Length: 219
Image (cartoon, rainbow, N blue to C red):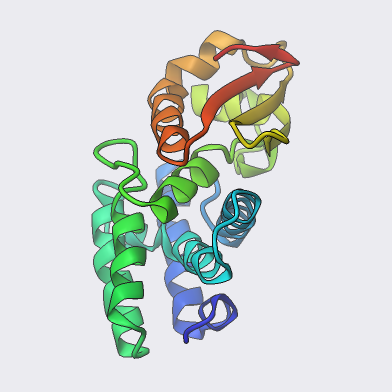
Protein backbone atom coordinates (compact mmCIF):
# COMPACT_ATOMS: atom_id res chain seq x y z
CA UNK A 1 0.00 0.00 0.00
CA UNK A 2 1.16 3.51 -0.78
CA UNK A 3 2.09 5.37 2.39
CA UNK A 4 1.95 9.02 3.38
CA UNK A 5 5.74 9.05 3.78
CA UNK A 6 6.18 7.82 0.20
CA UNK A 7 3.99 10.65 -1.06
CA UNK A 8 5.64 13.20 1.24
CA UNK A 9 9.13 12.35 -0.03
CA UNK A 10 8.22 11.95 -3.71
CA UNK A 11 10.47 14.37 -5.61
CA UNK A 12 7.98 15.14 -8.39
CA UNK A 13 5.25 15.95 -5.90
CA UNK A 14 7.64 18.25 -4.04
CA UNK A 15 8.17 20.18 -7.28
CA UNK A 16 4.42 20.49 -7.92
CA UNK A 17 3.77 21.81 -4.41
CA UNK A 18 6.68 24.26 -4.61
CA UNK A 19 5.73 25.58 -8.05
CA UNK A 20 2.07 25.90 -7.11
CA UNK A 21 3.05 27.97 -4.10
CA UNK A 22 5.34 30.13 -6.23
CA UNK A 23 2.35 30.96 -8.44
CA UNK A 24 0.28 31.92 -5.40
CA UNK A 25 3.12 34.07 -4.10
CA UNK A 26 3.05 36.04 -7.37
CA UNK A 27 -0.71 36.47 -6.96
CA UNK A 28 -0.34 37.75 -3.38
CA UNK A 29 -1.80 34.72 -1.57
CA UNK A 30 -0.69 33.43 1.80
CA UNK A 31 1.66 30.43 2.14
CA UNK A 32 0.37 27.19 0.61
CA UNK A 33 3.61 25.20 0.65
CA UNK A 34 5.08 22.43 2.81
CA UNK A 35 4.29 24.12 6.14
CA UNK A 36 0.62 24.35 5.19
CA UNK A 37 0.16 20.82 3.85
CA UNK A 38 2.16 19.42 6.78
CA UNK A 39 -0.06 21.13 9.32
CA UNK A 40 -3.20 20.05 7.46
CA UNK A 41 -1.96 16.44 7.48
CA UNK A 42 -1.32 16.59 11.24
CA UNK A 43 -4.78 17.99 11.90
CA UNK A 44 -6.39 15.33 9.69
CA UNK A 45 -4.55 12.70 11.72
CA UNK A 46 -5.69 14.25 14.99
CA UNK A 47 -9.34 14.47 13.93
CA UNK A 48 -9.74 10.95 12.56
CA UNK A 49 -7.55 9.24 15.18
CA UNK A 50 -9.46 10.93 18.00
CA UNK A 51 -12.76 9.80 16.48
CA UNK A 52 -11.59 6.19 16.21
CA UNK A 53 -11.13 5.84 12.46
CA UNK A 54 -8.76 3.17 11.18
CA UNK A 55 -5.04 3.73 10.68
CA UNK A 56 -5.54 3.37 6.93
CA UNK A 57 -8.26 6.02 6.88
CA UNK A 58 -5.87 8.32 8.73
CA UNK A 59 -3.15 7.55 6.17
CA UNK A 60 -5.49 8.33 3.26
CA UNK A 61 -6.49 11.62 4.89
CA UNK A 62 -2.82 12.59 5.31
CA UNK A 63 -2.12 11.76 1.65
CA UNK A 64 -5.12 13.86 0.66
CA UNK A 65 -3.80 16.71 2.80
CA UNK A 66 -0.36 16.57 1.22
CA UNK A 67 -1.78 16.69 -2.30
CA UNK A 68 -4.82 18.91 -1.81
CA UNK A 69 -3.37 22.19 -3.15
CA UNK A 70 -1.28 20.97 -6.11
CA UNK A 71 -4.00 22.19 -8.49
CA UNK A 72 -2.82 25.72 -7.85
CA UNK A 73 -0.03 24.96 -10.32
CA UNK A 74 -2.72 25.05 -13.02
CA UNK A 75 -4.77 27.99 -11.77
CA UNK A 76 -6.13 29.23 -8.47
CA UNK A 77 -9.64 29.07 -9.86
CA UNK A 78 -11.13 25.58 -9.51
CA UNK A 79 -7.82 24.34 -8.09
CA UNK A 80 -9.58 21.62 -6.13
CA UNK A 81 -10.84 19.99 -9.34
CA UNK A 82 -7.55 20.30 -11.25
CA UNK A 83 -5.72 19.07 -8.16
CA UNK A 84 -7.99 16.03 -7.97
CA UNK A 85 -7.19 15.16 -11.59
CA UNK A 86 -3.46 15.59 -10.95
CA UNK A 87 -3.68 13.43 -7.82
CA UNK A 88 -5.49 10.71 -9.76
CA UNK A 89 -2.72 10.58 -12.35
CA UNK A 90 0.05 10.57 -9.73
CA UNK A 91 -1.52 7.86 -7.60
CA UNK A 92 -2.62 5.74 -10.55
CA UNK A 93 0.96 5.79 -11.88
CA UNK A 94 2.08 4.57 -8.45
CA UNK A 95 -0.37 1.63 -8.79
CA UNK A 96 -2.40 2.64 -5.77
CA UNK A 97 -5.60 0.72 -5.11
CA UNK A 98 -8.53 2.15 -7.11
CA UNK A 99 -10.81 2.40 -4.07
CA UNK A 100 -8.20 4.41 -2.20
CA UNK A 101 -7.52 6.66 -5.18
CA UNK A 102 -11.24 7.34 -5.46
CA UNK A 103 -11.44 8.32 -1.78
CA UNK A 104 -8.47 10.68 -2.02
CA UNK A 105 -9.56 12.27 -5.31
CA UNK A 106 -13.05 12.84 -3.91
CA UNK A 107 -11.64 14.53 -0.81
CA UNK A 108 -9.34 16.80 -2.80
CA UNK A 109 -12.05 17.71 -5.29
CA UNK A 110 -14.37 18.72 -2.45
CA UNK A 111 -12.07 20.70 -0.16
CA UNK A 112 -12.72 24.19 -1.52
CA UNK A 113 -15.49 26.39 -0.13
CA UNK A 114 -16.68 27.34 -3.61
CA UNK A 115 -18.46 24.06 -4.31
CA UNK A 116 -17.00 21.42 -2.03
CA UNK A 117 -18.98 19.11 0.25
CA UNK A 118 -18.00 16.73 3.05
CA UNK A 119 -19.04 13.67 1.06
CA UNK A 120 -16.96 11.18 3.10
CA UNK A 121 -15.04 11.24 6.40
CA UNK A 122 -11.72 11.87 4.64
CA UNK A 123 -13.19 14.90 2.87
CA UNK A 124 -14.72 16.17 6.11
CA UNK A 125 -11.41 15.92 7.98
CA UNK A 126 -9.56 17.62 5.12
CA UNK A 127 -12.03 20.53 5.09
CA UNK A 128 -11.73 21.08 8.83
CA UNK A 129 -7.94 20.78 8.82
CA UNK A 130 -7.46 23.05 5.80
CA UNK A 131 -9.92 25.79 6.70
CA UNK A 132 -8.63 25.98 10.29
CA UNK A 133 -5.09 26.89 9.18
CA UNK A 134 -5.12 30.60 9.95
CA UNK A 135 -1.84 31.91 11.37
CA UNK A 136 0.63 34.75 11.30
CA UNK A 137 3.39 32.72 9.66
CA UNK A 138 1.33 32.22 6.50
CA UNK A 139 1.73 35.92 5.64
CA UNK A 140 4.61 36.51 3.21
CA UNK A 141 4.30 40.29 2.96
CA UNK A 142 6.36 41.77 5.81
CA UNK A 143 5.34 45.39 5.17
CA UNK A 144 2.29 45.95 7.37
CA UNK A 145 1.54 49.23 5.62
CA UNK A 146 0.80 47.23 2.47
CA UNK A 147 -1.35 44.55 4.11
CA UNK A 148 -4.69 43.76 2.49
CA UNK A 149 -7.52 42.36 4.62
CA UNK A 150 -6.30 38.76 4.16
CA UNK A 151 -2.82 39.70 5.35
CA UNK A 152 -4.20 41.60 8.34
CA UNK A 153 -6.51 38.81 9.45
CA UNK A 154 -3.92 36.05 9.13
CA UNK A 155 -1.20 38.17 10.73
CA UNK A 156 -3.44 39.02 13.66
CA UNK A 157 -3.80 35.33 14.60
CA UNK A 158 -0.89 34.59 16.90
CA UNK A 159 -2.26 31.30 18.25
CA UNK A 160 -4.42 28.71 16.49
CA UNK A 161 -5.51 25.15 17.19
CA UNK A 162 -8.34 22.66 16.93
CA UNK A 163 -9.65 20.54 19.78
CA UNK A 164 -12.20 17.76 20.09
CA UNK A 165 -13.86 17.51 23.50
CA UNK A 166 -13.63 14.40 25.68
CA UNK A 167 -17.18 13.37 24.82
CA UNK A 168 -16.30 13.55 21.11
CA UNK A 169 -19.34 15.66 20.38
CA UNK A 170 -17.70 19.00 19.55
CA UNK A 171 -14.72 20.28 17.61
CA UNK A 172 -13.47 23.78 18.35
CA UNK A 173 -11.27 26.09 16.35
CA UNK A 174 -9.52 28.14 19.02
CA UNK A 175 -7.94 31.40 17.90
CA UNK A 176 -6.06 34.14 19.70
CA UNK A 177 -6.33 37.37 17.71
CA UNK A 178 -4.56 40.68 18.19
CA UNK A 179 -7.55 42.98 17.70
CA UNK A 180 -5.27 45.97 17.28
CA UNK A 181 -4.21 44.44 13.95
CA UNK A 182 -7.57 43.05 12.82
CA UNK A 183 -11.06 42.93 14.26
CA UNK A 184 -13.18 39.82 14.73
CA UNK A 185 -15.56 41.28 12.12
CA UNK A 186 -12.71 41.33 9.60
CA UNK A 187 -12.22 37.62 10.25
CA UNK A 188 -15.86 36.91 9.41
CA UNK A 189 -15.76 39.20 6.41
CA UNK A 190 -13.29 36.93 4.61
CA UNK A 191 -13.79 33.56 6.33
CA UNK A 192 -17.55 33.23 6.87
CA UNK A 193 -17.95 30.79 3.97
CA UNK A 194 -15.10 28.69 5.37
CA UNK A 195 -16.65 28.57 8.83
CA UNK A 196 -19.99 27.48 7.42
CA UNK A 197 -18.20 24.77 5.47
CA UNK A 198 -16.45 23.66 8.67
CA UNK A 199 -19.82 23.47 10.39
CA UNK A 200 -21.12 21.10 7.71
CA UNK A 201 -17.92 19.04 7.74
CA UNK A 202 -18.08 18.67 11.52
CA UNK A 203 -21.70 17.57 11.26
CA UNK A 204 -20.72 14.90 8.72
CA UNK A 205 -18.39 13.49 11.39
CA UNK A 206 -21.08 13.62 14.07
CA UNK A 207 -19.62 16.72 15.69
CA UNK A 208 -20.76 20.24 16.47
CA UNK A 209 -18.43 22.97 15.23
CA UNK A 210 -17.42 25.80 17.56
CA UNK A 211 -15.35 28.88 16.80
CA UNK A 212 -13.67 30.38 19.86
CA UNK A 213 -11.84 33.71 19.49
CA UNK A 214 -9.93 35.15 22.45
CA UNK A 215 -11.70 32.61 24.70
CA UNK A 216 -15.14 33.83 23.60
CA UNK A 217 -17.40 31.37 21.78
CA UNK A 218 -18.47 33.05 18.54
CA UNK A 219 -20.18 30.12 16.81
